[in-house]
Structures are given as C-alpha cells and as structure tokens.
Image (cartoon, rainbow, N blue to C red; front, top):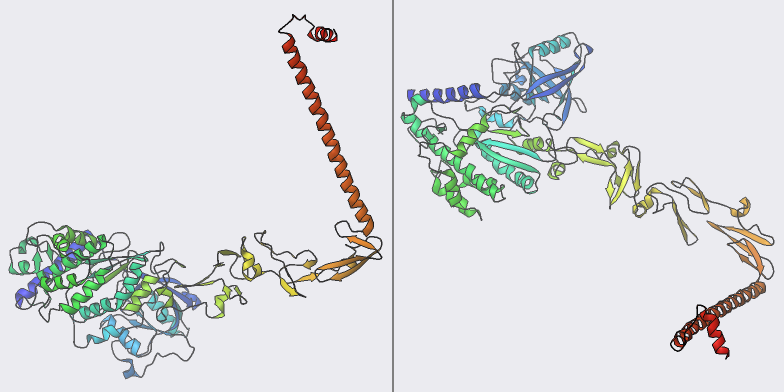
Length: 627
C-alpha cells in the first residue's frame, strides 16, 4: 500500500510540475449582470462550474436569495424548512451560498433539491476566480453528481459581500446570467475536441463517460458527416520521472522507456490491468482515428470506442488487443495493419510520434489553457464547463456556430432549443397570405431577415417591411402589389420589367400596393373627344362609338366614313402601283443607257484593228460610219 501511495504522489507531482512549467490552467468565465439595486448595478465576471448544465447559447434572469440558515449549503435545506421554489410565472431563484466546509457539488445538489434555478457561490478569500469542479475521490454517496442539472457560478468575495449587504437592507437583487457569448463562434464550422480515456474502471466518472459516448454518437456522426463540425479525440498521458525509470511501478504503468504513462485503473498494482494496458489502448484509439480520418471517415471513431466499451470491458478480462482487433474488423473498410503500423514499437526506448503529439497538445495555447481534467471537451479552442451529458454538450456545440449557420439538429430538438419564431412571429415582418416570414430561428434566439423564396429575393428591414425584387417577383403573391379580377378581366400593378415597386396599370390610378381605382376616361375627357364620338366608361378601359355610318379609329381618336375609308384604301393601293411602275421605268432607262455605252466601246475596239485613229476617236469613228 505504501508503494501504491508513493507512485500516486509521483504521478500527481509529474502532472502538476509539467503543467506549471510549460502551460497554465484557464478558468472559463461568463458575464453576470446585476440589474438592481442601483448601488451595485453593472456587469461582473463569474467562473463557470464544471458540473451541472450551463445554458450555453441562452440566458437566465432571477432574483437572488441569501438563506438565513445553512448559508454554506452543506446540509439539506429541507431540514431548515427553506424552499427556493418559484411561484407560478415568477422569476427563478438564484441561491447565494458561501464557499467552504463541503464540496461545491454538494452545495449545488442541496440548492437544486430545494428548488433553486441557479447557485452562486461567494468566494471566501480575495483571489482570482477558480473553476469549481467535482470531487476526485469516489464515495458511496457520490451518485448525486450525475443528477445536478442547475447551472453554477463562483463570484468574487467583493461581489458576494455587496449582494449580501443589499439583501440585508431590504433591497431586492436581480441578476441575469448570459451564456450566449460564453463560446466563440468565428465561422460556420465548429472545431471541437474530446479529451478522453479508454479506462473503464475509474468509478462514476468512467461510467458517465461511457454513457455519454453511447448517447452522443448519433449526433456527433450527423454533425461530422454533414461537414458541420471538425472533431478530434485526444488522450492525456504522463511521463515517469527519471529517478523512477527502473522501478516496477514505472515499468508496469508506462511504455517507450517511461515516456508515456497512465495511472493504474484499480489503483492497485497487485491485481487487474496496469496503466501500461490503458496507454496502449489509448494509443490504438488515437491511431484508429488517424487512419479513418485519412480515409475520409473520421466518424467511425465513435463506432469503435462505443463498441470497444461494450465488447471489451475490463471486468470480463477482454480489455486487450485481440478483442480490439475483432471490433476493428467488424467495421467495414478499416485496415488493422495500418493501425498496428501507426502504433509502432511500444517497447522501444524512443519517442512515439502519436503520443508525443498528444502530450504537446495538452499544453494550453491561446485562450484554451492546459488540459488536466478528464474528461474535457474543448469547443472552438475554449474548454467546455458542465455536465458530460448529450443535450448539454450539444447545446454548447450549437452555440459555437454563427447565427443562421446552425445545422438542423440544433433547431429541431426540443430539449436543447426553443423556436422563438413560433410566438408572435418573433416580432418580424410576415405575409400571412403566402405564409412568408422574415423570422429566422437561430440557436441563440432569432434574426429578422428578409427571405429568399423560389429564387426571389425580398428586400427591406425585416421588421416592418420586406418587398420582393427581381424579374420573377410577380410570381410570388404578385410581388406584394395590387391585383384584381372583374368581369372576366384581370389587372395587376406588378410589372416584371421592374426590379421593385408597384404601379397601377393603364386605366387605373392609386398607390399600386393596396389599391388601384378605375379611371373614368369619359368624365376626365382623356379619350373619345372627337366630333360625333360617344364615350362609355368600362372597368380599366373605355368604349367609344360614332353615330351614323361613321367608324371610330382609336389610335387617332377620329370618326371616318366607312366608304371613304374604302376609297382611301384603294387610292393608296393605286399610288403604290404607280410608284412601282415609275421605279420600273427608271430602272429600264438606266439599263438601256448602260447597254448602249457598252456596245460603243466594243465597236471602237474592233475598228481600231483595221485603221489608225487620230486623237479624236469619237469624231473619226463617226465620219467613217457616215461614209
């Protein structure tokens, strides 16, 4: 037993010493806004607890209560006849308790059982905020750890004192916790990591981790196959100090000459599996991911680790390579030889490239901080704080997307998201006739954004106005313009040749949007004003007639005799015929002239062969012809 304790001290010393020398632990913080009283109103920092269910992507407002008894929350509040249950339609109760005397988790569990919506723990010393975590040692009454569902936060001693003073003076304190920006969301794809362990003999934490892997597998694979996320599994390893390399403990818990170690699963070197077995299985799972990732199927990792946990448990003594290979072979398309090649020689006194990268990745870079807690989820380079539960983790992942880029799974599961467009259309613009709305549900709330429907883009502020634009806009609710059918005729104020706007058609007047009224051309004397014309107004047009044997010509607004129109037509025809005849005569005259000129030139050429010509060929030729 003494050797066991010494080895545990060594492992802790190596882990802590390595972390303090090369990295740092980052406390994940959140915004806490005090809305009243005026004396302490403002925004403060608080540290997220690593248990319970933080409302990632959401917010919560409530009234603060500081109990008169059991102020550290270490006992059941029912024993003091204290209840924090809110009345119907009342604000949730934020219970403020003092730090000390018991685990943070026990304080949260007691507050939750008494009906609290959130627990705030006031620090008892002037220091930087720390992360409240679940206890490491396992006790028989630790089952409540998995049942804590309320959010928790640690506040500074100064803020805790200010809240207590206000409550003591009879001033109600109201607080709002906002998790909407607790995680960054730089783009439309979320990168996340799961720092895990293949060990299944570490008590309730291992049991919770295995259950999480089984229940989260489906959602993880949907996100990965759809290209919404980029997932990477990681494994924490430790190294053996040089002074202990030759010890039996180091050799049984480490591989590659003491470079990569894992704690003994049962914390008992005399029985069961060793840390060496755990580190080998961790390496195999890491290599499995690398091989499947290279083949474009990284989501198979979830199938492997869940099947391995079911088929190869330590209790049944199947936690070995033979069982692992059987699981791998059951997954179509995965080459065991490639995985063995990735694992390499675990007995060689050299660095293993895969585990070396895992050790390097443990060191915090940027805002992430070191990874020292198992299991740990890192989302967009920020460590997740809260219960390892499917809905809680999925909420956190969904809050990592930019608004309007969330995958469908974030907007369809009732237990993780509320559709704010269902009530009063989210306060956005809506066309109830065609059921078109500018409200777009997002994981963190909603946005009012004019939509694109059937290729037609709507323009506007999204709150009070959206208008269809483009060439196809009249196909959707007539572009939002006026349209009416009467007496078998249909008129519309939407013009496809306009990118936007509405205009009443000819024969109507109005705004074109809600109303177009018929124009009475007869009364307004805009048509049928010729002598002898009779005007009759119709819907959208007019009718004009002439008395007697006269015919109305609409284009010229004139009445003419029907026979005169016929005579006029024949006159026009004769003029056309005469014009064509004159053109033909002119063409014939030109043709005769060109023929005669051509014949003269030919005659001169023939005569030049028989007699000399002077410098006046035309004159001489004429004389000879006369002889």
